Image 1 (cartoon, rainbow, N blue to C red):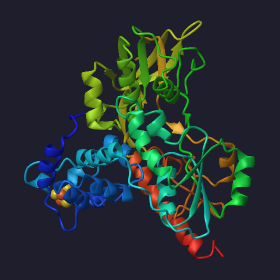
Image 2 (spheres, rainbow, N blue to C red):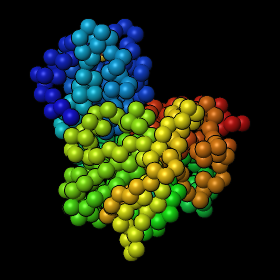
Image 3 (cartoon, rainbow, N blue to C red):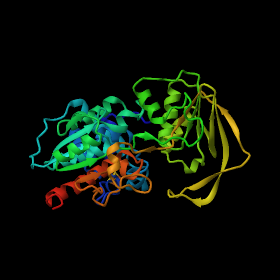
Image 4 (spheres, helix red, strand yellow):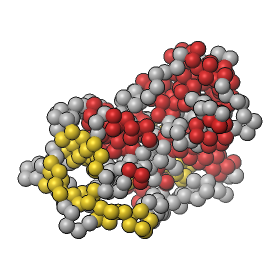
Length: 423
Ligand code: SF4
């Protein structure tokens, strides 16, 4: 990660922006931030104005300014990149929002109420973005979250990538517009919340780790990746340095776990992935960072059994090859090679093969074949007056994609209420 900008460096970088008339950077941003608009303010030294432009489009402005994968959305399409190098959009965004967070927010102007009440269940990026957008439209918002609000950014993105202060900078701002209720919502509570609000927006995310479908996962020393990351972030249950840790999975979450384990001082950290490097769903800079920290990669390898008497001692694996057939994600199926078994010693095994939705009230909803909540184009679910968004409807995505979905769902909810709550 590059060092943060100074004010002078930020102005110089902002000067390079071409102020495109139909800016591809804003179009490709899932939150549709007015990027040339805020960069123009950085250029004139108006950092508070720049932060306000960003925040008016993205409720998680500080979080996204720090961890948004700019190499995927705004920067690769930046017109300036055709001349020399793309504008450092994320860094300018973060410079402005952090400046504002340090200076303190201006006195909030309350949005005029319109008499409608909306309950948002889930305090992650989609829920927070939807809540803020609806609050701007004049709806009263109650947001229910069993932990502290913030979702994945607060609970499982490692502190070395995103600090608690950076998350809090956004939540302090949002708490002026949204009523946070610290509450676990079960089926009974869900029914009561539904009666007491005009509309519900459900965005509880994917909260349970998908179990590895192999024998031995019940052994002590097998820690699901979310528990590992959450415990590490909270400073709990840290494996002793010197351990050999095997992480099974090929996504950004597995890289976060690997980098976290390395920073804890674990001697050997090996990532086991059943496909090749090209098929990994990771950001290139995170992969490079993990490698530079000494994380080893074992590609084309599938776990077969976790071995141990009283706790984990080893992982039996099989080599794989990639078949010509593609799965629903467009990647080739891995095929295990008979007779290719081998064993890797392990003190901890961390399965990181994805997460699934969990919550008894979710049984009420129609689901997609993959198990996510089924929604229409306005994010309306199979239950009248209940909308849903975020990872719960589309599977694991980026924070800014969840923000974008929360905003779009807010428009669907606003339209639904304006048209007479489905009457
Ligand atoms: Fe500026 Fe690049 Fe966006 Fe054009 S595409 S407005 S140059 S940041």
